[in-house]
Amino acid sequence: MERVPAVRRRRLGAELRRLRDLAGLTSGEAARRVGWHQSKVSRIETGHSSVRVEDVNLLLDAYSVRDRDVRDLLHTLAGHGHQRGWWHGFREVLPDEYRDFISLETGATRARSLETTVVPGLLQTPGYARALTRDVLPQLSPREVNALAEVRIARQAVLLEQDPPLELSAVLDEAVLRRGVGGPEVMADQLRWLARAAELPQVSLQVLPFAAGGHTGVTGSFVIFSFPRTADLDVVVLDHLTGSLCVDRKEDIAAYTAAFARLCDRALPCAESAAMITEIGADFSRLQRRTKEAPTA
Image (cartoon, rainbow, N blue to C red):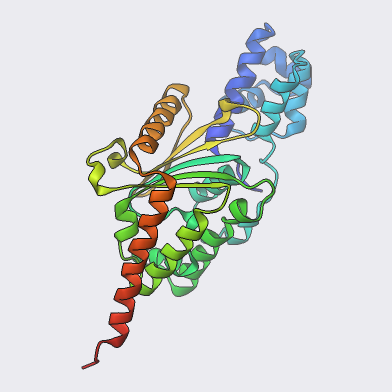
């Protein structure tokens, strides 16, 4: 059974507690109405326990909640807790936080991504994904490296195969394009794919050139996930050395949303960004040819 990301469990619990309070019930009274022990209601409300959609319906009926939008929101929060995603087959090599990230990505309708160091996972080629995984996690076996690279590529189904596809707005620092992950051949292939991906209707790709100077994004990469029907589900995911951090406070989400908008304003327009990607890709292709033509000792 896949875990509901902790951030969604907490949001679900907080909403259920708010509705219970509006109904004028204590947790003990709510539990008696649905035939549970009071501790189960408390665990759900504090986000320490996952909950089935059927149980959510019991609570909503007990609280006399008839609003369809409210019920749909809580169904969305609870609905993935007992679904086994495709990533279940990779559970031996995927940390819990990564599975949570994939679950969020799979359920989202839009992703706004700032990348300051590497190509976003949804736009990586297999060669780039393998090279990057080897560089970042040198302790892994070749089998584990290949498995993680496969996961990276499988994630791209939300962008390339899903109907409707995930809408991706990505801002890439120029350093992403110039960092030679895997060598000239890998980078030339990766940037060719980036240029093609930039033409997809569901992708908006902008480059933040070095000439832009200092900017909000220098503090680190982040992704803002948005979900169907309501902005109340938006989540920001921050990368750090040992994992990821989910941020779901409305004030924080508003700050990151505003920061992303500022970055888009400072970045090159999409057409100019595509031209820069193509130009840097051509530089890597020339370097690749020179490397092949160089005499061996």
